[in-house]
Image (tube, rainbow, N blue to C red; front, side, top):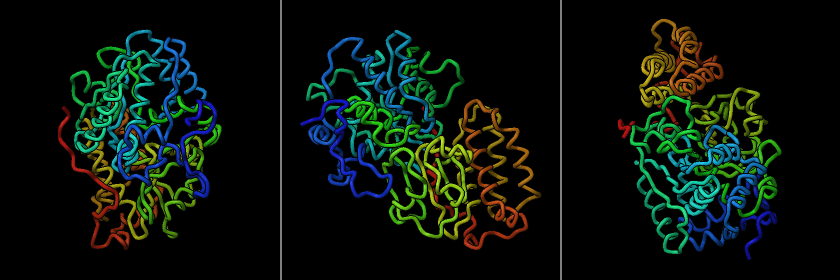
Length: 447
């Protein structure tokens, strides 16, 4: 029997006996099946959606529930989801819902894992959000490079149509898989017939987005959580996590860990506990938090901190896209940072000076430093260029790149000064450009 919304029963999870902080809500049943949940399996795992009376009051109840639950965006920004939904609904015009499944962060795999294992949970969230904000259509944006994922979602949509669950039309769009194409204004611009590049704001999408309508853009994990809140209520949602970080979040853990993969953790879980769950090597010295727009830190400075915006804010970091990378022993953090920065420079939208000229310049400086073959003093040049680039881009791409690079120079300061003198890290000798983090090939397309 399915529990009534707000009863606290929740999905049929197995929370007992797991490592500290690990929870199964979104991920319940993933390991047992190994395939996308059918509609029947989906109902068994998560419960049926509650039957609500039609009318404006009932759909606005969902916005109130999401607000009370304290759900924040799981795509990286961490903005309160209820506030976004209310802003779109308040426009009192026909709206559009856009689900962001682009996951352009190379170190993250959580969104594709969610869509590949529980596509109906995301689709539930899209329909519920559309009903709540007054949208007549919902669009799911996926990367063109993952056509296997598109096939999974389209089969799930067809299954819903056959079952008579197509109250809101769901359109699937395949976009070029560039790093900045996952930015919300990029999605809107592409859906409006343009290129998948960021655009200037204001107006924000909630003011004038797809077809000039108020538009709600949410990450697919955020929408999946909306589907669970609709079933079980805000009190149940807050049973996991902490008052300032309620619920759970999906994280991608990789690097020097014996069990890399996707972990669902309660809000407030400490970084050290997450690494322990992934069986991290005992001798790791540094971690990258948040992804390629994230920050590098010595492990002793962050192991005891909660993986939350508030907790990591103390060291100038944030969970970002839920990424945690443990730098393997013997690897050079400067080599990793230089590889990332070279990728970010190549992936820029090329729409402003900081991206066209600034990022390639600091990428070259960091590459010289990483290979211990400096031309002059790249450290001094980078520090000067950081101040010129930050805050001056047409979007936040150059800011994220500078933040990552600056944190690497701070965390690996001793290595940087050794490299300036022509002494590379011992583990990098003979392999000056070898990096553990993935660097995808650029597609070179924007439309």
